[in-house]
Image (cartoon, rainbow, N blue to C red; front, side, top):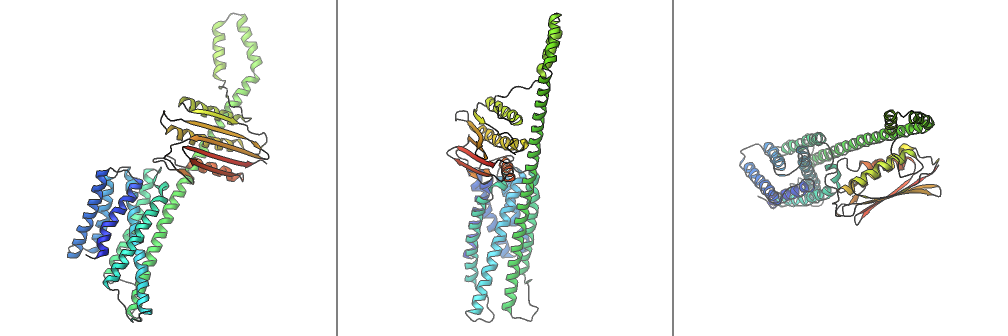
Length: 441
């Protein structure tokens, strides 16, 4: 067993554990068992390969199957998410390892042929070990980098979404594994006998490099494309749901306006019932009137839909014992549609209520909202308490299991972009702050 093979047997199970642990839960004992089983499985398959008891391509497939089985068995989480995490880990290790090996093999052969003037060079054992070791180091670095950059993809998605992504990734890995097996059995890209063995090797390694590069590009495009489609669907669904709420609030205000318009007639009718001593009819009449009058909002902003929205959010904050401070003044004829105002305030306050809800009752939970006209701009500022362990990244916070993660902020950014505004978001020392500036047309 070469040095590079020993390092791979030890390093890859550890790196795979780090990657899976970043997105899935596992206890300390299960983690040690996972690494031990992964290492033992690799050693067993290596010994079987050396003895030639099973075809190499079958051993490669079995290696991926065992790894996926350990992830499904030992890690905690939904089955679809565990399957996607396993497929993503396998594809990253396989594609990057094959890509770097092909690149360095081409470079080594080119050096031996051009610089050392060897007409038909072959890679010696120590060179293959060196290439395998360097490739392994680069693969470990790629795994570490991707574990931190792709956190949002692994949270808040439905079960079927993960399954739909896992299957194509496994298919891409299978194609590359078959290509590796073919290269090991002499099935390589050749010049047809018109060129030397050197060019045959270069064609083969370059062809394999091209295959892995295209496979990696296709896999990344598929994963990020599906993620983009899901985000757009969630944004659209949430946006239309909030529009429906705004229309409902608008209808309530219209009913209130009609009731106030008919108040004189109601007073005359009640006076007649009072004069006739018809107390039961008078009581029923008053109850009927009370049912058609929406509760008054303490937040008078200058926009009725926003008033009703702030009232609902304030009532929710009161029920959850969250400190509420709100001073919102919407300028008349500001050029911002009331639906967009509701999208803006609704998403900011929904995120704030959700962040406060994740805090314990012993911690201070507060929401502050302020909006006013500043010269020829509409300024919106919001602050709320949040978990100090959470960190904000572009579009989301680092919460562990966010349903609809980051969708609210994406809708806010869409509104800001629609009106050519600016947005600034900060999260530090347990306080989330957002500032929005929209030009008034």
